[in-house]
Image (cartoon, rainbow, N blue to C red):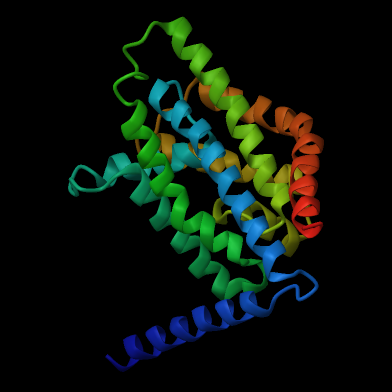
Length: 244
């Protein structure tokens, strides 16, 4: 009991420390700019998770992290009927953040918390919205087109999140932290991390298919095309707000 109370107190202090640091982080930015960047991050998050939902509904395979989430969801949902993909996503992100509290809490920004809290519910919302329209019973050609659209939408949303400069999602931080701590190239680490996500997710029942391959090879390059465009969007929004 004493040990449990100590652990609870430790994590409570950690969370208080994080929010205190978030509150006073980057004082060069005004409250208005910080708010705008968070709004942009949330907009990018919505767009990106619309793309993720399209991947999931086609049942042709998802991006590596969501293969992992889907595998855990399908395993646990056999005994927990109220569990959804979104709730599973949030729970895994919470675990990642708790691990980061121990390893290096400096990686956690307010945008990281926003991604953790809203990522899963956004997927659940779009799943309910499109579940009757997009599904594995659709013609294969239509599923491939939906998959391609999801790929483009995911890549665009990702670049808005990145260029908002308000924080990184917990799942993306896994490769970033490992790369930094081991002083290894991020590209190689990201490939290994994604492979681990896919392998574990597939073993647990996650859908691995052409969508996973498309995500692995196309989302990055497409995001590279969108990055300058998304940067201009963010800069224009911030500049327009500053001029008022």
